[in-house]
Image (tube, rainbow, N blue to C red; front, side, top):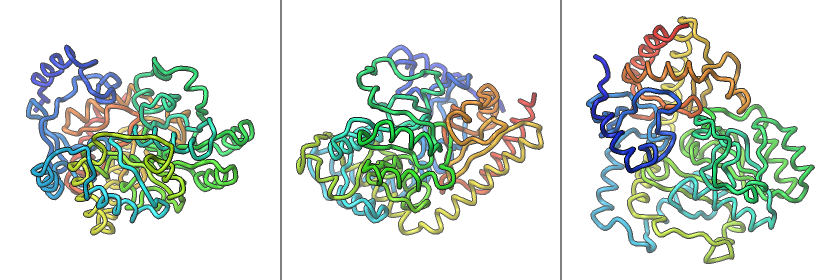
Length: 433
């Protein structure tokens, strides 16, 4: 049965009258892939339903946080229970310490943390803190890495900026961007050169240890270890942006997986169980510079709100208590999915390559390996767009961008994986050159 779009089309036209592009975040738009985007009305387990009644197997998962699937019963129950007592107080609540305790138990270098409302707030605050701690101006980020939409970080970012072919962002002052050094990912020589050129001037290096915003791109070989050694040598703060990878790749995130301890970690996504949340944390020495203990100011009325804390506690307790089983299952299911689709492409004569770490993955329409933004940008985005539309018609919901990671949840089943691989076979047959 052909996919229905009438109601979603009406909702999109209505939204466009009041909301720029009809979307509250540009990566939701279908500008890069074409076709008509669905308006989602319900999610349950691994599935989504749109306003026209179409059902999809979802591999976006709200862009990563729904590791337990949509409307996980224990998370929903925790949110309902919290809401009955009030939705926001702008005051301290005991659940903040409950969630903080769970986070700190997973990340050995974090002794104290601060909750915020988004990943953007977390990375912005962590960079401000690194500058306060080092009393230096310059920051290093990497091409294709997206750390939120703070002005200093919208320099050669990935994700939506790459998808929409925007080199940066209007409204970002050159006076702000001049202190951001954007380097190629996975290039140790470029790092050494930057530190030699700006000796004793670099406050921090911020990195996604597994990049998710130019597609899934892991660090190669000993790159993270070299980065850690260099920043320690230069007394530069190393920030791991684990907004996407934290609790996704392992209970202790990418730093557990690779055995690297940064100075600061930023978190989000999963620690809110699907509700808006972020956090940044590190040693007491650094974190005690944050107001009210120190001179680095950061605040937020809704930070640590009871609904997000309750959802986060319910999610992290599930991951903690069932971690070995959960992460083993996620790895197995995702491997079967990624390899199955790669085999389907090969059998159809379609050239793709895949990157996967745990339950994060991307199929690149690219004949070579993808290790950085330069290689990712060689992907055939038009071929991806045709594949995306064909998959959507076959009931598979993927990120509407070649440059976004996709995710598997614990709610996905072997049957879902088989259905997705079969849908890919049909899609490749339809788009074969």
